[in-house]
Image 1: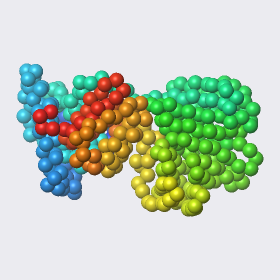
Image 2 (image 1 turned 180 degrees about the vertical axis):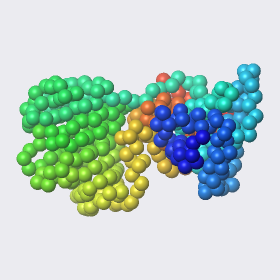
Image 3 (image 1 turned 90 degrees about the horizontal axis):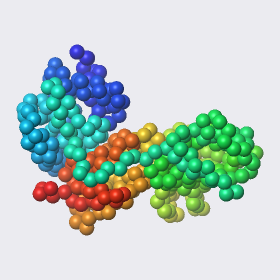
Image 4 (image 1 turned 180 degrees about the horizontal axis):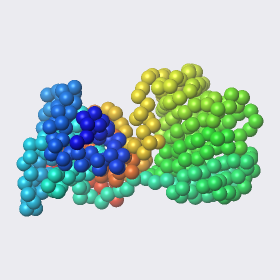
Length: 392
């Protein structure tokens, strides 16, 4: 039997949605082993004593559990499968429902297997057509009209007047020629600029850059979102231009999100950066984010994990509304959300979640349906969202 500290660590990682595949299999085996029943119950009890839900949250969790019972357990019993009455397994489902409300339910698994080799799905399957996650692809264009389509191998490098993919020379280029790396919706791509700076471009984004930087400065332009790891060069500052804002760095890692018009978020992970606009200037320290809205420039301390989760193959959001989250999902899955008119009292409800970016769209959307807030239907590349009602 494994020690308590190790099991508790796996439990915490499960709640955060960061279990690796081999750890997930191990966690399932632990839950199935009746010898661990008492220990896991104690861990869950202690966890929820620290996060005692309010009456409203408790009511929501009860509704969520009732939906589990109606849509998951009851349909299984109608298929003449054995009825599962073990208290621990029922408690686990109820705790899962509470986790849904408090933590946004980091969906890492689709099912939990019992010690009798019976299967209790934690999530009901959507009846709508599903949509797969985005992939690694991009389009490289030069200002001379040359086009290069880049596929699954994300290893583009500019060096010594050459374009390399997987360390193989694809094309020779003139050093002064500017290029655009474009990631369509539902795609992402990594590249290395001529100075060694690494750039990770998110879906629906464009990066403009020269084949080789000049002797005095390093200049690029961005639309959308990108994560930069800038190669240090004290004599040659690195500048990123976004609309009317300029970010200056010497050697650091940071994320810029400029999807929304007249709104730019610059999040610093390491080093220091200077933000310049026509009306203001400020310096960022690690763990800070600059927010530029129109002519106003501010900074504040944040938890950077949500901002850079996409670079770690995660979809993460904390206390965001359904419409805020939908914008992120639309880009990565290349879909459009259509919201029903009766969502008024749900629009301000906030959600938190953390799920693998490789998940199918339906797995992401179940974060919301498990809290009894909304229901959805996928038709083609359109997601129709409506308020959950008890009759559903």
